[in-house]
Length: 418
Image (cartoon, rainbow, N blue to C red; front, side, top):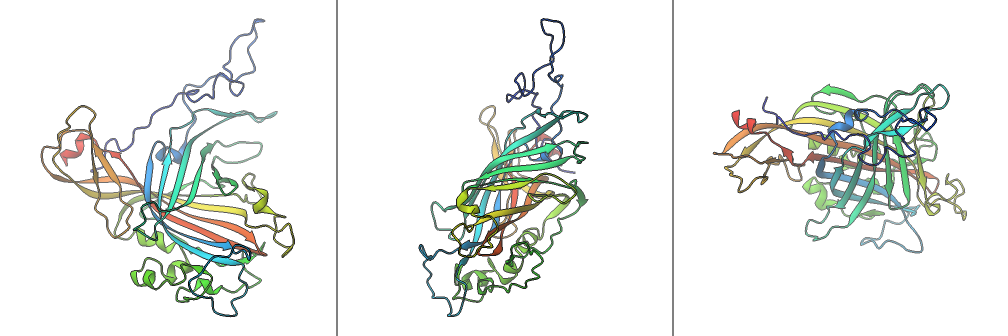
C-alpha cells in the first residue's frame, strides 16, 4: 500500500565487471593447445547472492547518533579541563568523552564474483559484497561551520556462502579500516532474523572491567565520569547540565546508549525489521574474525604489565556490532512539479518527528500536477557498536549508536494514484 514501486533499482552487475574475472583469481574455463581445459572455474551467468546486503547496495544513509569513549589520559600531554576534578579521583589515566553525532554511510555497487578456492573435498565458493564508507562528525556545537570528524572508516561488507570444511553456515563479514591504526574483520555467526514491527534493544553497558573479565566479577566500580550530575570529573564535556536539561545527553543514555535508538523510533510506523550481529570474536565452535592494531596501540596486547614500557596505549581488542534494518512507513507532501528537462528531479523530505530526527528523502522525475500527500516506505538503518579498548589493566567499552535514514528513494509515477 503506497510504497514506491521503484524504491531501489538493483543494478545486476555481471561477473568480472570490477576485475574479478579473466585473471589468476578466476580464469574462464577454456581449451589449451593440447585440447584439455584449464584449471579455472566455469564462468557463471549471475553474480553470487548478497543476502540482506542487497538492501544496502548503491544507497546512502544519513542520520544522527551518540558516541562514548574512555580515552587514555597522558601525563605528558594532559587534556585541559575547565573544572579541577574533585580531589581523590584516582586513577586519572582516562577521560570519558561524550559526543552527539551526525553520520553518513554510503554503500557502493556490488563487486560480483569474488572466488575463494577450496582444498581437497571443499569446493570453491564465490563471495559477493559491497564497498562502504562511514563518516561520523561531532554535533555537540551546532554553530561550528566545519565540525571535527570523530570517525572515518572504509571497507567491505561481504556475503560468504556456507561451506563444509570448515562447517560454517552462510554469513556476513564486515572488513573495515580505521585511520587510528586498526583494521577489523567482524563476522556474523547466526543468520539475520526478520520480524514484524520495530526493533527491540537490549541494555548496552559502558562499565569498564578487568581485561578478560567481561562479567565484571572483579567488581570494578563505576567511575565518577559515569555520573551525569558530576561537574568536576575526568569527562568531556564536564558540565552536562545544559544537555540534561535539553534531554540531549541524560543519565539514562550513560547507563545504556541503546536508549538513544529506542527514543529515535518513537512515533514511527514500522513494517518489519531484520536484525543481524557481527563480531571479531568467534564462538568456540566457529572460525573467523579478528582485529589488528599498529604497534603504538597494541603494546604487549594484554595490559597486564601496568606501567611497563610495552603496555598497550589503546588496544582495540574486540568489536561487536548489531544492526537493525527496518522498513518504515511515513507520509510526505508532494508539491506541484514540472520537470524542466528530461532527467530533472525534485527532492521531497518527510517531516521530522522531533529535533535531530533521521529524515528520509525522496526524488521524483515526473510531473506532479497538484499538491498531494502520499504514503511511502523507506529503509532505516540502526546500529549499536561496542569496541573494547584495552589499557591500564582494564577493558573500556567504546559505544557508538546511530539511526540513519535512506536518502534519495526514487518514487514511481504510480504513487500519484493513491
